[in-house]
Image (cartoon, rainbow, N blue to C red; front, side):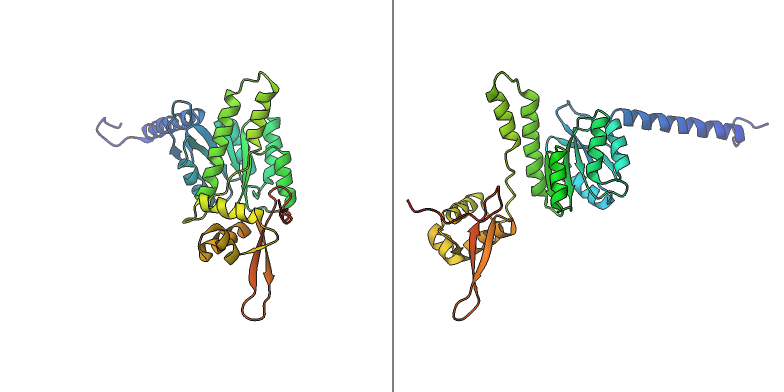
Length: 285
């Protein structure tokens, strides 16, 4: 017989283990049902104004970075992380996020195939694609599935921040809209179609970028960095930097003009944001 001060016997040890396991299971169940379980961490509930986000990416390091980015933007809160399409479907059912950041290259499902399964299950969460998929078919498919945005990897924090903030504004507009006339509908749709302003690289100002863009749009034919500098009043180095930024962002074409000696001159023409084609020379007044 075992005394009260002696070593516990097998039955007592089993009972203690069972009790501990039951307590841990109950705590985990409560955390999951409250929507606060996030990759082993706890995210406190707030007053209901937060926008819950599910991060879906098969690379756990990438998912960790995306989660950290999201947590820096108010009022967004990461409520879960999933590494496969099936995990994403389960997580949406359990955690009920407002927004899913969805990678397309998942190990079990193509990301876009997750969206119709979410809708078939009755989930109305919004989806923002975050992927390295640059194929036109992928982008068109995402648009057909009604994604709220499409962000290419790799990207900087500012690239995601501007899209999240735009989504928050649009979501608030939709939730608070009272449709009394066609004008109300038009305002909502106009907001949904508004383009996202790309984040400028560090050290570049929106005012100077707008000035260079306006000058490039109005130019007859192409402009060199020197010509752009003379027209805008900025230095040639600055003009070249902004022109190269527009080229890298896909908003300007570059052609080379070969002279008698020296390096060829780089000349720029602004591209139409809708068609992607270079704008024709501006007509003289």
